[in-house]
Image (cartoon, rainbow, N blue to C red; front, side, top):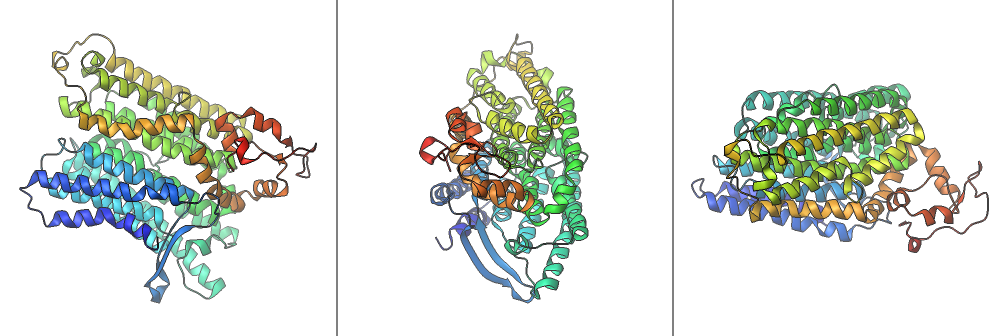
Length: 548
């Protein structure tokens, strides 16, 4: 327990080190070692789900050790509910990405799997780190393996896409580093101590002028990673030219680094600046939602369509986050997980047909459901998950975001809803063009359906899509204390309402909205202006389904 997070963090790296001593001619052994290492990395992270205590508001599984004492940097790892779910998503998608590469990669296997495992270590470290310098180290570590994965094992314009990805992200990282240093020196000026401790930064009351500049510095680093409009142009190129595993990891995990940064750093450390920049963030998010969806509708390349759908979906995530209320932020976090599940599965599906036909042109495919019925069924399920069909995971996240946004502005909610409608249009249009109709291309007549190994990569994603859609309460409970920590800083009025009275509901909780528990809404009387119930009513309990 004392070093549980370190074990999770360095298991993929240990697998990469073992691969260094394996002969590159022994390709089967390389594949087996990589897959076993990735599976162990996922297996050792599973206890996080059971051992994490949702009722404990503090960071858990804390590990601290001096790292660079002369400048106050520490090896400081800990998790809350938000990072716990992202770590589990990372280890699961890392294993799926490695497993999906079994037959897709035939050249330089040793280097490929080493880069994939090192990339996973970088992503895990960024989600665990509570020392800003350590976080920045892992943030930069992620750049190198992804650059090589795209540049060496990609397709078509892979070098152009790899360099574009690297330069965009590097520019954002350097600007973000300036913001980190500004925080670092300001903390020393008020405390007399040099430290990169993020938990201490959460307690700072920075002057607004300083918050303003640091928010912009963080904005460039995180907005490029999301990516938000107009910094999104690297994403379609990187997705299109990356190998399947690279696209899966990029969509499922790497894009979440930007939204994670906003919630972990920008909102709680810079609350006044976050409120000040809400109009800018909302406008950019709305443009991203509509623009990404419209451009996706016009795509002829299967992979670029899914890539532009990510631009639209992640813009919706940012919009929910900057509603700055508990329901909107909770929906934003949950939708990050949902996007990782559904879009990761969609890129896997594109990779399956690309491996068979070596083309991503949508016009090259039609009637695939006749020769690949299992594939068509999985594709349909994940398409419905992506567009937010009730009883699947996407619906819950979108519902919470819409409710959180609607409270702040009906106009914002209308634009968000238009993005959801357009999302259904381009995804169903894609499905109709590729799965239905006659098989007009003779090359499609002999396509093989999903193999047992390929189907195995979709099983955990299907289970999660249905689980979150039908019973999201366990996920929402794990997010409660994390969201309240952010809300207490950036929107204290919601936190004060929650504290003032346990006998009334100032706003519906995410758990109640997600479970449609009308009886729980009725059980609690509405709050009056003083935060007290207008009529006496007993507080709802966990046994009634509130899930607190």
